[in-house]
Length: 124
Image (cartoon, rainbow, N blue to C red):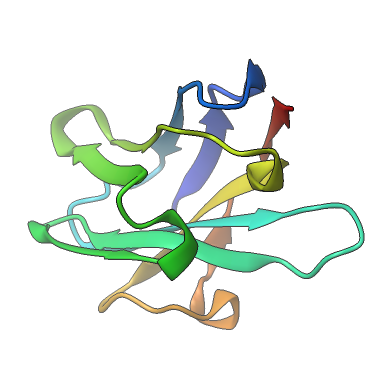
């Protein structure tokens, strides 16, 4: 069992950067896969990035964020980060972190634990 809380969202101009954090309690991230998803108003929740916490080299990104976003973790502090650079207005969404036991998944239906989300707004 794990509880997740996202933070780090805010308002930023296009081209700027934000770093989102996902803090876990109850259990550590050491035996979990963790993913980031986002949902814009009127749109379905979509995959952004994921990693296997025990293997930091195994990272995955949606095509539209490759080269701009970086997922990382600090297992000792039970934290997963999403560094977002070169932000675009179309990145505006509520960003959620999610966790599941085992291998990484690109489907939100495979994740058992979810945070409440943090708002990211990118102005033109």
